[in-house]
Length: 324
Image (tube, rainbow, N blue to C red; front, side):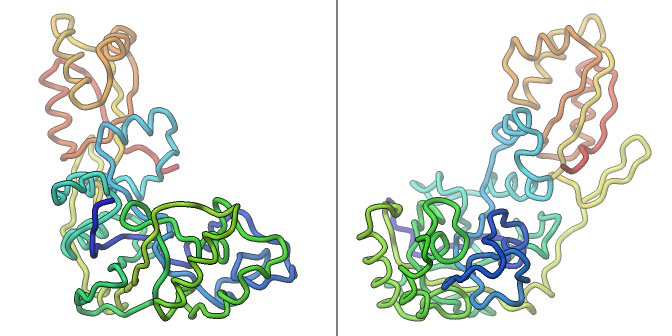
């Protein structure tokens, strides 16, 4: 794995992860860890995990995102689509283009964060390999250290066995990791590199836990005053008399194709292939079965999308795709 000494990620805030986590233990269960319990409110959780394993935003190209949405329209919530598209367009250092969950400048992190439709549920974190001494960004505060698959992924054994079990989970008695849980700070992370290394050694010695290429990472978060001063341009478009704000390029558009000029069949098929990832046969079948509707994630303004369809001979109208 390529060494990436530091990077930014955009992850869900603890409160958002906790409220949406589906697999809660029964209320009153004797539990040593910080697993979500039925009826236990966020404020009552003793250690609120703030490491990397909080569903980070990942970059997705327009074609890949379109393919995902056609296979499952609710496969990626609308508030995330803009950020995923924005991240996919960023230039990454050579050799690590595949690390599409990482951001390499605070400006990039800020710009992607501002495309989120539900910003209150997200935060920017900065991470560095624990053995490095790169200076943290201004207005950031240290949260702690954890083992992670960073930079290749965000999986954290701390999260999986003591906070939000998603993969292997934890021991049934809730006592196997009690010693290490006691060492976690209020952010669900270790204060020292030694404690994190001790936990990782114990965790990987078990025969049922997750193997992988681990590193010890130090996690930083930004102060609330940092977010208070974030702002970005308001994007807007007017289409069919409707004003859409803060929707470009994040929206999925439903294109309602009514008819196509009889002498523009080839142009119409080409236009559909240009703005979607349709193959030739799929685009031809859609054109030959008009009227029809296709959902498109378009990286650009909706006006240019409409102009392209007009030039190709389509009679159509476009509406914003409703949120799932």
